[in-house]
Length: 399
Image (cartoon, rainbow, N blue to C red):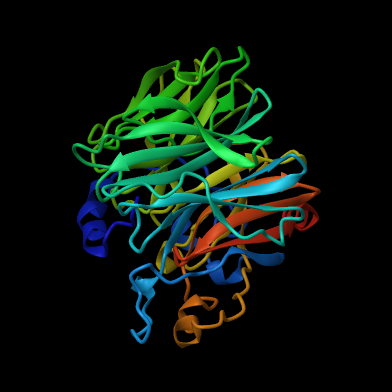
């Protein structure tokens, strides 16, 4: 789940030199050529900005020690939802390094999306060498569930990880999260399940070796699922699949996009024509990506939006919103004009690294509410923030 080093990108790039990418990006000025995009002239979307949970020092930090970026608690993998007339957000909260032992899941709530309560632990801090990764918020049969990947060691991928996907339920009576059920063994999902017409649920799954399958089920019981293969690591030369997303098209096919850790700096695409049971071989597209997580939703305005780090030259320092009118082809890209947060007391000496154009902005998640898009993201993997963008402003991009 970490970005590929630059030397690896150079090593893998020739594998795609002769591949003709699938054109899913069609922009007014640059057409289908991603190399012709002038990111400086793309429109910008402004919005209302707030901090969900501020940066904090790691538990090992001692008074008098020089303040460094690597001496902060990790905050990543945020997810949003509206439930019980309020906003909810969860994220992975670790002691210092991404996906390190004792990483837990924390949560916060807000009545208006801009003012957030003090964060609390959802899972409790696991005992070393175990850890949790936040995996989404899911409303099933009227109950609010939080999904959590539980594993052993440093990172969820590799050998002997004891990887399990679990569900926690919000108990209104006690105002607390309670463990509800195991979902699946050797599984980490990317986003919560989506409903199928027959009442089943469907979601992506990666095992501890990055092999991608689809899980279908969850209707009769939380731990009843069938797995269907999508793509194995090494199956497509040079392609290292990660963090897939998918959605249903008007013709009932499922349209999937994948982050590629193989160095292409593009998204890959696949289609299922039988509700996720079989999939076409993933194909390189012309949509640029800075080897980072993406997310997409259909809006009430009739178009689909996707959030991503779409400028590989700047990595994760900019977030972009792309628009598709037909659910497959993206015809507009705009940069999210994310303001810098106010300096936090005690962190002034390093605050320049949190500034606009310097800080990384990654792992966006978005929901629609009250004619706005609410976009949660992580700054520097150290602070959880949110940007409210009016859908009226997004509409203007299509005019």
